[in-house]
Length: 234
Ligand code: DC
Image (cartoon, rainbow, N blue to C red; front, side, top):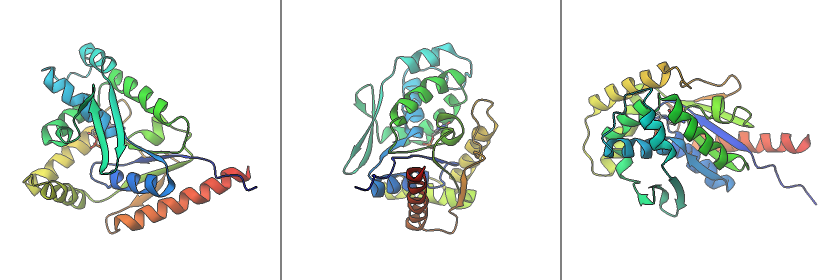
């Protein structure tokens, strides 16, 4: 009997708006893997920080780390997409506001916060059969992931995609302002000293500026299938 293909850990990293979530969701669906959106974890915690009226800016604040340790974040796959629960409350929609986006990128510079969330992410993915997306999955969370993708696209295209997403949900946001926010978040993600957004040396770089989401997903599934076969042969 043929050995079933090994269940891989697929790490997808890249800047905001590069299409990571769409790609990771697609690939997980095709391969029957679990999809983990680590940005949603930073966002859910950021929402709690805002509600507790703590400053998301304070990179060394122990209060943020205490709060992270005292927080339960669940990601549940449902027919209509992934739902995010913060201490049992469905916050799927609330965590997508521009205010939470900014706060999430501020709390993400806190090394203690990252340590707590990275431990959660490792627990969620250690069995394999997972597509995990974020900024540091291939470099820090799973440096031994069998397939690493670094997804990128021009800032203008990324801003337009974000803007369209909001428009479809009926939230009017300003395109120019979205572009500025993307540049600001890029800067913060790239410049922070703990786990900045970096391309793992063994990551496959995919520029999605001129690609349709389906094309990108097909490419990654092809790479995953080739990789699973190679793993089985060893
Ligand atoms: O992917 P996103 O926009 O939902 O992520 C929200 C913020 O969380 C983003 O500013 C960067 C941060 N983040 C991170 O630092 N590390 C991750 N693995 C995922 C997200």
